[in-house]
Amino acid sequence: MRAASRIITVRQRAPNAPNNTPMEISDLLSPDAVVPNLKASSKKQVLQELSLRASRLTGIADKLIVETLSEREKLGSTGMGQGIAIPHGRLSGITHMTGLFARLDTPVEYEAMDDLPVDLFFVLLAPEAAGAEHLKALARVSRLLRNQAMCEKLRAASPAALYSLLTDPAARSGSQAA
Image 1 (cartoon, helix red, strand yellow):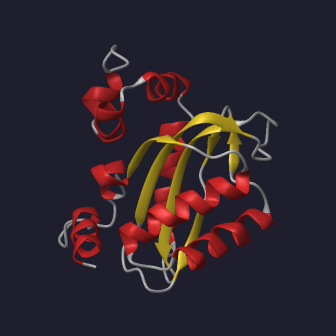
Image 2 (cartoon, one colour):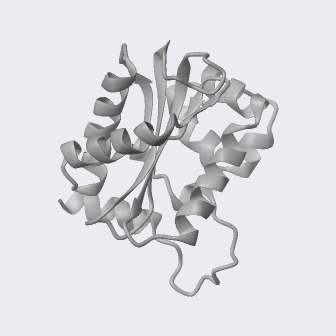
């Protein structure tokens, strides 16, 4: 539990930061919330594996997380197309937005909008009462992952380079795939 509270503290925005401050990926993601080589063979297995890892970050039971993500998927796939999905949901018991990024070894069928398999996942878990902040976080993650050049860099990056690539604007704009 100590590790979870440490991680949540990393993600907390500065208490005096104005609400109009642009949300950054580093507000959502910690270095240990990046899974460079996730192994899964189906959508169900991906959600289970991601939930297990998110449970370690939040201290929330993985069964509750997978249930929340699965319920959201029933409303419509969070597969955006181009091999990207942003599974998300609101949970009681967490107080801050929590992100988890995973790159699959082998893409899986995910019922994405373009029917292509998915290999890049960004899970976003929000407090149950989150309103605009949840939407801002979804928009920020979506903007990042809709950039085709960025996704190519994420697919080619070494495991050690993924967090920096996701959170550091200088790394994203650089020409190296790292």
